[in-house]
Length: 466
Image 1: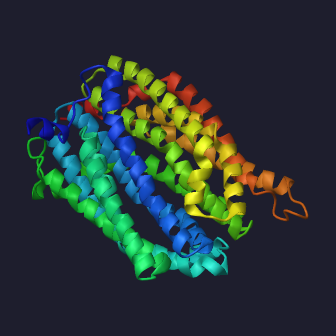
Image 2 (image 1 turned 30 degrees about the horizontal axis):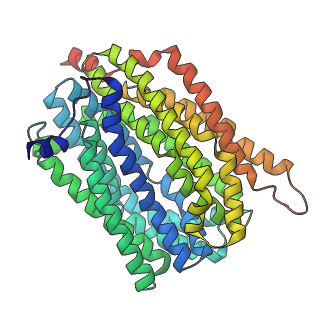
Image 3 (image 1 turned 120 degrees about the horizontal axis):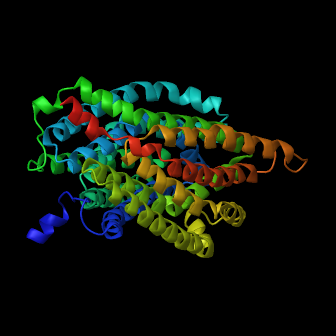
């Protein structure tokens, strides 16, 4: 029983062999991220099989708007993860408690904002994006249901981030697995059983996310030995709110700009027609699985770096970065090869249309090498963020998105216009993604070696002001 409890307890990453501790922490997150991707993919599989390719396109076309309006939670989540890991590493119970309490209150405020704004802007934004008439009603219904039930999504993602900051990646994984299984069951029940179509998918997701959020809250309430969670700590604290926003805002802005760029690129994708829209949805779903190691090790490096900087062990940060980078690149390479070999079987899970299968595989081959480049970028971003430097990843992401990806996509589309492709070749959006990923790895490596991230860190500032 003691070993079982230890498995679900916070982990101190400031001791032990770096690569072992990083791997132990990252594996549950990798499994969780795969489950999260399956969570998202289940929607597409079920509507594609039971409703049709247009319903599949509708779910995909809703994603950029959904991502844009979730940036508030990205900021809170990133800021909370950094502060929690550093204060936990520094063994600062009071500041850790204030951080978690403030995070919970800010999430409630952000959820209310999205619940009000989301349904109002949904239809106008879909129209602005030239969403085809054949799918716009489905897109609208999907988004409105999602936004009304947004608090479940918000609290799960942010509180799971808090748990990971404490070194507990197992609990977040278990809650996500429960939610994923429930989501799939409800998806089939609502879509295949009740014929609710696309709205049924959104409703299933909202319910499942709500359950996972409740489980996270119960888990935190039981962790009284590590921090205090009472009315005093839940009170909105100006100092901690400022720090959360200061650390998280760059990531929130990055996500906002990225989402806006996705909306601009989605508009280009929509001009290619329903077949290419559906192809884009399939590729991005499979792409999500290839990206999982990158995001998992990136998050692991944030927590690892944060705890060790909190404990003032910079030598472990340097060594851990080398270990984490090698593992991330190795795992990403293997998964990329597997997807190239078995990708067609994955695509056929979404659709039986031969033309759509062939088009999707063509686009996936274009992106392949980019996944390895992203392993470098995400791992080094994780180190920078864990150290408290969220500005450098923001600027690099903005350059990749605004200066590289969007112009490259539209330039290729313009230069490849023809009678057969009046709006340009659909490969333009995927080639631009590959170029931006590759350049991102090069730029990130340069700024990591430059080393300004080493000057950041909350705990030294905190103790000076104490």
